[in-house]
Image (cartoon, rainbow, N blue to C red; front, side, top):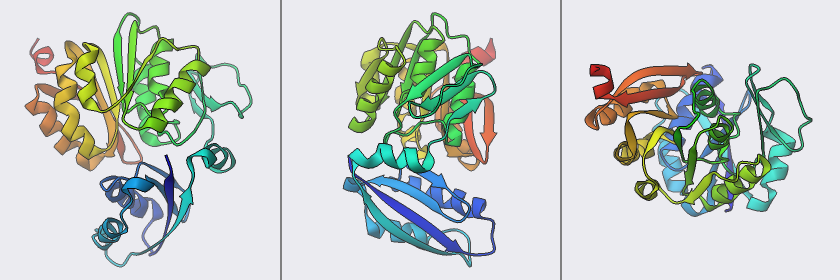
Length: 288
């Protein structure tokens, strides 16, 4: 899949982190999939087939902070060039204490980690460099998954699914709607000797065919999650847990409302730079 790389700069005295967090939230609602923030710019990526300059201009015109002047430029990125772009500019090894190392083949080997995940960082989201992936990695590492059934929804690189498999989950299913991510997930499973993971190309309508799960992980954007939570609940075991990320702290209320409507309650949350990961469980578990 071909992408546009959109580089945003700004003129304002407001801190860049605040501006870029708000900007990324708005861009996510119009189809942008991943973001890389430097000190003075935000680089965002969107598939060519859904990019709409009118929607982008409208989103920027509705930016919630006054006296912020935003500018952008675009570059066409062919899918086959993405490995080189990541290697030269963005993807760095991700280290979570001594528990987990996520690296690419072009990174040197490191010792002292319980789990080492090797990925080809293509256009699939989920390398661990983004806060939401790191948050979800911490959640999945903290669990005893031996003998459990796990769903990685919107799997991207399949890094969460691979960790689940390495933690001896009995069955792992990874689903993504993007064909590029699907192929990248297959490749990464091969790299990590976890080819027993079932990779599925499709959206949330596909998961009802996959049986029931003890744990579901969905790291997507807020609007997709709100739409798909009812589908997740249909395949979540009564004693299971649903982990959600890909949104800001301010979005928790909207997410929680939908989960409550579907019989789930919020039992924990983790936060990093205003991004969050939340855990929901069956309301009956709370009663017990």
